[in-house]
Length: 117
Length: 113
Image (tube, rainbow over all chains, first blue to last red; front, side):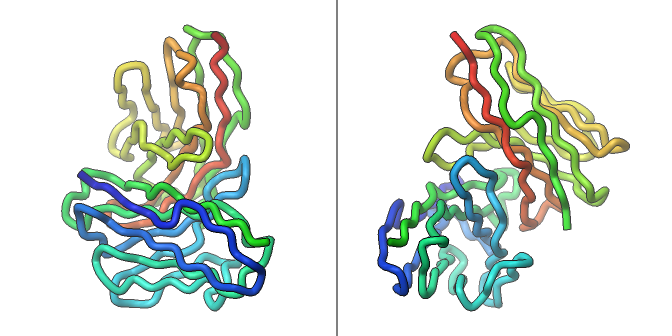
């Protein structure tokens, strides 16, 4: 159990366009999901906490108007990178944990490699 | 917020030797400490975790120790194998329900056959 699906796995977009990344918990419900960004050979940096039915909580330095998060259901959170620029190119990864079966721990999605050209 | 430091950043060991990775944290309220293994281009995988009410936990060749007073915890891998080569991240979290992780900077472990 505790499978998290992330889509797409990779995407290339032009500067100025927007990209949506989906994070789905396949076999459990998650009231909270987390979005991380990872640059090459660096650690995972928490961007925001996605809360079902309410506004996301952003970490300091993360632009909420640029990185739009929507957690409309207990199994889906989306991250939209708006007006993407080359410096937004990175590996984006989500994580979630069952709201009920806490012992399963946190599971990461497979990640999305975004390249902005 | 929480600040997690991790050392060393790179580590090379001979196959069969032990590897130790250390992390410190700043927030005394942190009470959950997982360790993740990440292979190139893949998602992090949980390999072991420890809660603040336990000082040590072991799972086959992997063990984690926690010193709450000093606010540091360590990952120990014994009898290392080439497939242990990966980047390892420690993390700290407060609480058990839906709280975010703060990750260490990572350790790139290379096991030399």
